[in-house]
Amino acid sequence: MDNVLVDFRSAFPYVPEHDKLTYKDRMDEVPGIFAKMQPIAGAIESYNELAGMFDTYVLSKSPWENPSAWTDKLLWIKEHLGSVAYKRLILTHHKNLNSGDFLIDDQTKNGADRFAGKLILFGSERFPDWTSVMTYLRDHAREIRKST
Image (cartoon, rainbow, N blue to C red; front, top):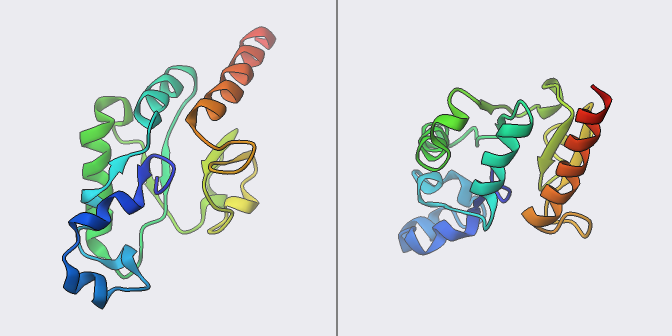
């Protein structure tokens, strides 16, 4: 979710200065920060299209020391993705325990590097944005339809 569907840094202008100082090197622990984040360009449209092509879930890690993040992430999904993502949020620190053909993530941490399917490293040279991700996944969806 973070830095794939949502722009983590977009919340910073809405964080009070005292919280910025208190949580200086751990901004993901600021209470309520995940509710303030804006979608990344193309993310909402891309998720909606992917949901029509694949059995699509949102797989995200939530900071252990920020219990509001769990609720905020659910509320963000409801607000920005609505019914297309109904009951499709999985919060985990071990992404490799989930199965699927593709995982779109901006990091290789938290089990993403051990995910059994194909890791699409969002923000990398090959997949810098949603346009490149969607081109790749549309091609794969066509291949899957041809083979069935």
